[in-house]
Length: 445
Ligand code: ASP
Ligand code: MG
Image (tube, rainbow, N blue to C red; front, side):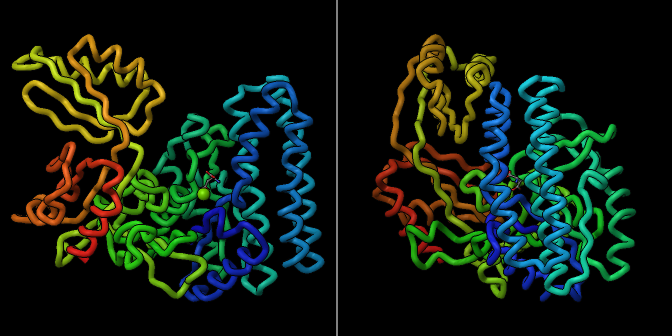
């Protein structure tokens, strides 16, 4: 069971977690928690401040977050729990103050210091959660994730070393579980082979949960957050949007681009590889079943699971007679985007032109002036990408025509279909988004 930052943001959230954990005690859960919400950002901010030479200000900026931890502790813990946690918090504060000073003085490599600093979010939340669970009568044991998740030394986005992690997770957590205790671990943090603290990248707690669940061959991995799973479309557009019961991994991966609420495909890969279902649940509505992500999922009767969208898209069209019958044209084009570190989302080509979309236009001017060496460039702002996702989409005759006949009076800027068997994507003017989504949702759901 993994709990995100908002699921442990304050005392009442911690209490909800304790209730949810207690209700599943019979299944021998393992708990992974994120840092209290906003604390990771604050730690990263303080690191930057320290790096610029202001380590005292940096440390002071964290005080409100230390206080949030103390508030939970004094509200929910008994005398001994409070004493234990406060001692832990004091130590953490001393260590952080020292690390921030080192960052100012650059007395260790900065990337290494940064991971060490940011790791205190999960170090503290997992300590605190273990105490809260204990206070509510659950037998728990806090386990330092750095003892079980082994990574390379790519600080800030370290890659787990699976064989070693699997072995350690079983070795460390197995006996605790067997003993009837609930292990509580901080997500996101890990250690390199030489024992330095590393982190798995922003949002990495899901990754930790998937790794630990896969290593233990868990019955399922639950990602507890503040929404009820993945929805059929944006509920702000269609009030009758509903939770999708089951998604395949591929469907979930395609949807990931459209909203942070969907799991990042990379993070749940270990679970999918081991065929362990991942369930997205809402800690405010624990009795709802949420959305289950499986390695494979059945085709739903109407073939479509979800309609996602993203606004603020810019379309670029590059046409060039040089493109006809020549090789290397695409390579030259893509190199420009690579040079300006700009992600292309949707792409569609004809014999003499390419249309593509961007959501980041920071380097647009420079990109366009380079592209103009290859051909004529048109820029169209104010677009939106609509993505219809469903297992079996490519294989179903007539589905594309049903989609487009539903919106037959809307002009479409470009279409991408066939790259994935579960995804049909097209681009329209932003002002038409609500209408298009409503019509598609009405027609398919
Ligand atoms: N606390 C980390 C972050 O904010 C990891 C996580 O929440 O999953 O990115
Ligand atoms: Mg998070």
